[in-house]
Image (cartoon, rainbow, N blue to C red; front, side, top):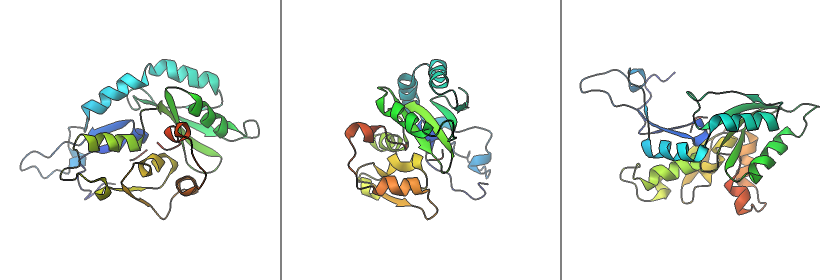
Length: 209
C-alpha cells in the first residue's frame, strides 16, 4: 500500500530499464498521486535510449528460450518493454544454471544478465548492457533531475537485493545496504576480489525490480 507515500520526482523500475515521471495533482485536487487516473509517463530520453539499445524483443526472447530451455520466461512488451524477466530454478538436472546464465551475459556484446533473489529459485532479467539502476541514476543526474544537487555525494542509495548492486557502484554517491538485505548484495558489494572492467560492466545488479 502507498497510503501517505510522498510523490517521487522519478520512478526507476524494471531493474533500471524504465524511468517514469509521476503526474502532479491538478491545482486543488487532493487525490494522492498514486490514485490519479493519469498514469506516470516514461522519461522520454531514457525510453528512446532503451528502445534503440534493446533491439528486437521477440527475437531476444526466442534466443533466451532456445539457449536456456529450462528458464521460465515471463513478461510482455506492454509490461516489460526493455527486458526479458525470467525465473531460473537450480535443480539436479541444471545445477549450474545460474553460472551459465551469468557467463553468457558476461560474454554477450550487447546484453546484461541480472540475477536477484536467494535460494534455488532466482529472478533473472535479460536487458541491454546499457541498462541498470546505476546507469538510470547517472542518466537522471546528468540531466539535472536532482534539483539543487550538483554533488553526487548528496545522493543516497538504498537497496536490498542483487539487482541493486550497480546503484552502489555509481562513483561519488553514498549508499546504504538495508538490514534485511540478501546476502548476495553484501558479498558482491564488499568483495575484495578484483573485478575486470568487462565483468564489472555486466555485473548482476542492475529502484523496484
